Image 1 (tube, rainbow, N blue to C red):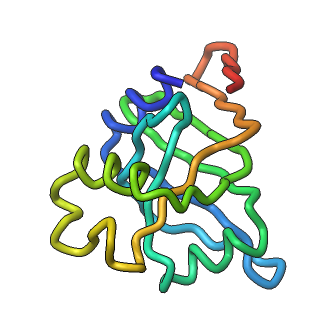
Image 2: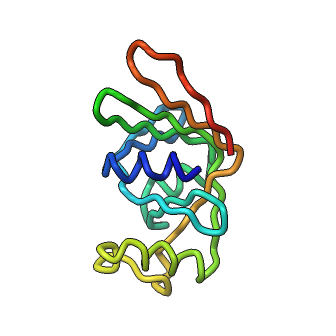
Length: 130
């Protein structure tokens, strides 16, 4: 899990895919953190992406850097605890201009049943599950 987080942080931007009305939806994301031994991402509950995840929590992330890429798929679970939201925002203070752990909008979600596939041209894929 730490290796996945490190790769996502090094990329800076990764792309999260969800499904809406049977069609794929992909958008850039940038937050990822480990809290209580789970990999978390963050969004707002007013966004379409959050509504899509609520309807279908199966997601996939894709990130690319220096000829290597990561695909991370799994089920996202909502964590509505104050401590989880605060941890995410404390670790990403630039988000505080848009979010607050008490704003009723900030959502943090963690991966359950995750599978990360590390790939590189000319090399065999490596799979990490958590």
